Length: 83
Image (cartoon, rainbow, N blue to C red; front, side):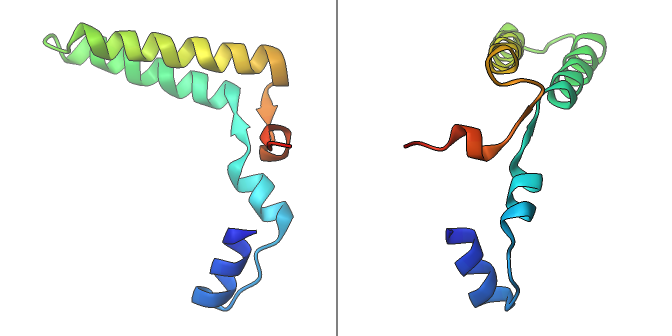
């Protein structure tokens, strides 16, 4: 709702709910693939990368896999709305 109002006020454009869903859906497979590419780059190209960075990668991967198990590959923002 806030984005719809903001788009109208600032850009004088309508912001459809379908656009919101398309733009803010979490694409788990794509995010996992990107995370893998970023981690591989750091492992292969940055010998002094801190271990904490790889711990964050691992935590992100775990959260994505957990969300994937619970919600599926593509998580609509509607499925995350608080009641």
